[in-house]
Image (tube, rainbow, N blue to C red; front, side, top):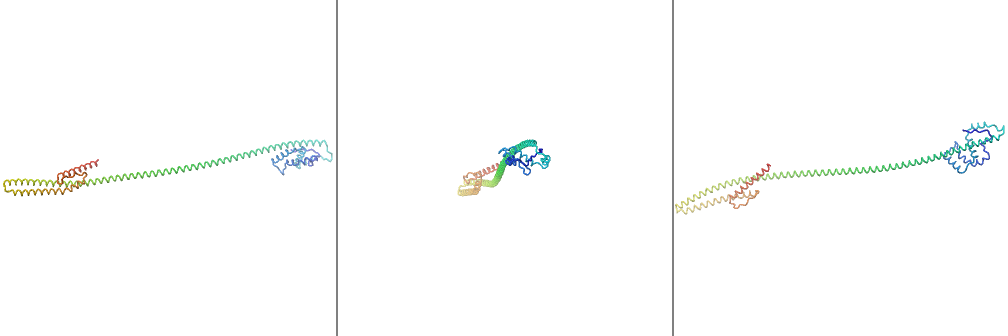
Length: 358
């Protein structure tokens, strides 16, 4: 809203001499607080300049009003200025009215005071707004700093968590690797143990098979030896039977010869009784009988001496050696020993057959 100026002879572009001192003194403050379209200043700079100027010295009201009025005129457009100049009456026709001039000056001063008060309030609001903006900016900076610190702490926490997680994963991987290695070693030891057990079992089976084969071989060898011994015993039995038969025949022959000798002796005695002169003939016959008897005994002795080595060989191969023969010429005792050996061999054979059946 533009103020309406009355037609007076006051020209604001040419200030009065009484305001020169104040205008020169406070021109810097007015210029510092003025805003132009050509050189705009920031709100913070204007607030700071006005605060410094207000703190240094209090600006008098006439100079303040003059500076505000001059600035208002500078901000006015050409059309507004023409309107004001056309509305003002010509000062050449009539002279200035002192009452009107005083009234217009009073109204202008009142308007200037109101405008200055409004401008001061505006500056105060702007200052408060600037302070509020500054506080908001500081608060925003603090918030940004807090957020930055939170983000940094969060990043550090995330980094520590990642490091801890990586360390935990590394430890877990190492533990799994150790468990895998231990399991593989355990499996390998178990396999080696199983292999050793199988080898020991195979060796035991081989030993058992070898032992069984050895037993079978020894049993077959015993059977072969028993068969050979049985064959030998049968051969010896056959020889003993033949010797027994020949002995029986020799005994019968000796008995017949003894009977003949007895008959001959009786005949000789009868002849001697009949003929006393035949004593010499009887002696010759007795000699002949003695010679025959000695020849018979020699033949029996030779037969027994021939059979004695064979009997000793059989006795050496038998399991129970027979007692030594008291008299090598005792044929009866040798036959009894041979028969005893044959009976023992037959009993042993029967026991083996019974054992094999069971």
